[in-house]
Amino acid sequence: MTSQSQGIQQLLQAEKRAKDKLDEAKKRKGKRLRQAKEEAVAETDQYRMQMEKDFRLKQAKIMGSQSHLSDEIEEQTLEKIKELNGSYNKCMESVIKQLLSMVCDMKPEVHVNYRATN
Picture 1 (cartoon, one colour):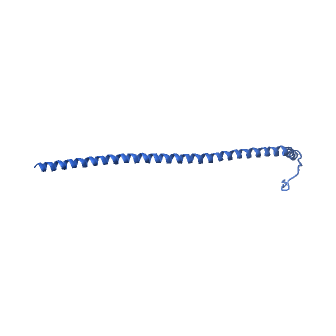
Picture 2 (cartoon, rainbow, N blue to C red; picture 1 turned 60 degrees about the vertical axis):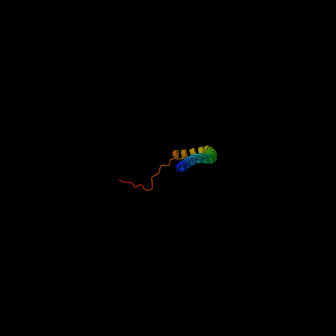
C-alpha cells in the first residue's frame, strides 16, 4: 500500500510540476506578447515620425516655391502697372486733344437717310 501511496504522491508531484511549468510558460508567453506589442508600437511610432518629417520637408519645399512664385507674380504685376502708367501719361494729352476736337468741331449736316416729311 505504501508503494501505491508513494506512486500517487509521485503522480501528484509530477502533476504539480507540470502545472508549474504550464504556468511559467503562460507567464513567458504573456511577457513575450507584451514585449512584441511594445516593439510594434515603437516601430509604428518611429515610422510615423519619419513620414511626418518627410511630409513637412515636402510641404516646406512646395510652400517655399509657392511663396517664390507669388513674389515673382507680384513683381511682374508692379512692372506691368508701371508700364501702363507710362503709356497712359505718354498718350493722355493726344487722346484728350482728339476727344475735344471731335466734340468742339461739329459740322452740322443732314443725315443721308433723313426723309423730309410735310
